[in-house]
Amino acid sequence: MNMEISQATTLLKQFNQTIQQWIDQLDHYSIEMLHQRPQADSWSLGQVYVHIIEDTTFYLEQIKAALLLKNRNAEKSMRSRARVMFEDNDFPDMALENPFNDINLRQPQSKDELLQALIFIKDEVNSIFDKIDLSTANGKTEHPGFAFFNAFEWLQFGEMHMRHHLRQKKRIDERLFPHLVVYK
Image 1 (spheres, helix red, strand yellow):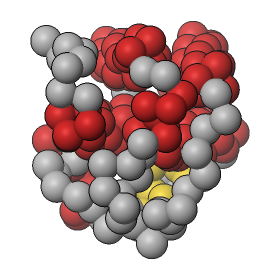
Image 2 (cartoon, rainbow, N blue to C red):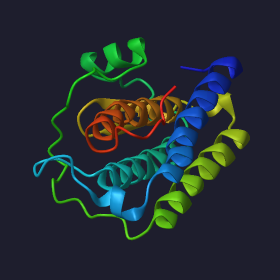
Image 3 (tube, helix red, strand yellow):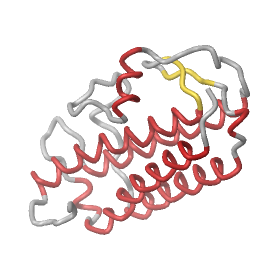
């Protein structure tokens, strides 16, 4: 599946806008605020940041691996439930079960740790997609639950994942920090 330059540009632009939201909104919180849990059985905002950083870093590694594969696994496809998400360009608006998520995910040590990780991911993604040869970007790697994605699908999946967690972030903000005005 060769992707047109305009589609690739749109995906990258959307990724940059979403990750920039996460970067910009860090300014509104202290490390103590980031450590607060809205409920005992849910993540703090800091843990949500750690989660999106860890998962997006994994997606970034998958992007690199898929590009190295050239055309390997190109004929393999994603599962139908993933196809629906990609067609909608969105995760379902609900809490999703993930066996890899741990309620005791580590808390960030500092805001700077989060900021530097997000900036690194953004810079790395942009560097990769700045140099990509669209004609050979057909290799795919396997997602543990959704089957096979190419580099562009991993990018789109990462952006959708971050956007999905923006809804969670908004719920946490509304519960713990209703005085903050971080949403337009």
